[in-house]
Amino acid sequence: MRLFQLLSSFKRATIYRNPKRLPERGGWVRRVGQRTPLEKGSNLQEKKEKGGKSMSKQLVIDAIRGKRLERVPWVHYAGVHAAYLIGEKADKYLQDPDLIAKGVLFATERYKADGGPLVFDLSVEAMSMGCQAKWVPDNPPSIVGHPLQDKSLKEANLKIPTAKDGRWPVIVEAGKKVMAKKGDWALMGLFCGPLTLASHLRGVKIFTDVYKNKPLAKEIIDFAGRVGAESARIYRDIGCEVIAIVDPVASQIKPETFREFVTPACQEAIKVIHDAGLTSTFFICGDATKVLEEVCQVGTHGFAIDEQLNLNYVRDLALKYGVGFGGNLKLTLSLSLGIVNPKEDAIVSLAAGGYTGYTFAPG
Image 1 (tube, rainbow, N blue to C red):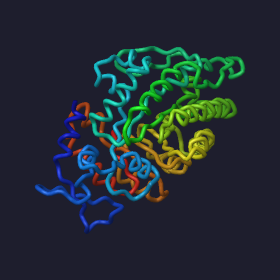
Image 2: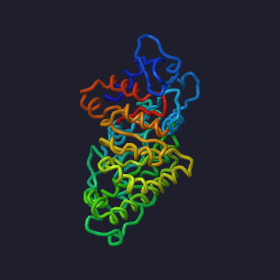
Image 3: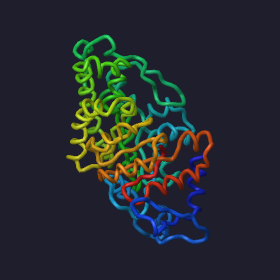
Image 4: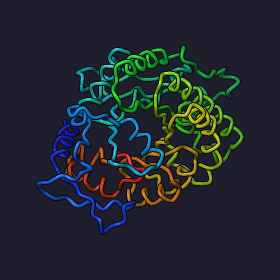
């Protein structure tokens, strides 16, 4: 509800760009009573009412690809929050393609978003390979069994899951239903990144393996990368316009470790996405400051961060490398706890993000 109130109040606020500041640095000033030419008709519903052509999907694509924008696109990243919006429990929602489709379509329309994910669940790949998981009613399932904790890949006999394995059939069916009904907004396919998936398979041992047992770590992380490439193919075939590698725990390693293990493991998936002419992005969580240059150079068109990063620093790095960047509406401080006023938090993020390659989204 807080997010909906934020978007409603934000639409009533007037944000002006300050011509005295460099355009790539943002430069927004709030005023009262008038709207800029850019704001007139920028709202998706407003354009439809006037008979204009919506460009929401292309805005998201252009932003992630680091291009100059007419307006900043907004992506909601609603995962199981979409289940809450339609009055369903997360565990039931994630196992029913009709509910997933209903939730995604409803969330995107309610929040007037330019794009959103099909599902935001990093347990799909691991569960589809037989990892033990715990279902809960208010969150995605948690991986509680790690098949490579005491076994090798060969001993565990793990296979790369296809669209017919594990939880994928439900997601594929849901994706088809969304694609058949959605408007001109970008559907995002999110899959588990190589280091995070390796941690599902191996457990916390993977974080010492990358220093003490590098051959084993490389074998597992490379395998996880191949699994991710197959996930990218599945989302490609569904019709997702944007496909994201989501590797939250990659912020916990050193830059040289990221370059040694994560970067090469992402390349096959990135090639799948780019060969299909689709748009790629890399999601990372936590304080990723020390590896952010590596994220910029991983090979995706753009990346997204969470609330722990300074958006000015993020913006400057993105501009340096010519990639798009997304965030940084604070989920904890503003939307959950209300310590920071959500509307003011949004204005600060938009001011820092500017009009070049920026996607406004929860961080």
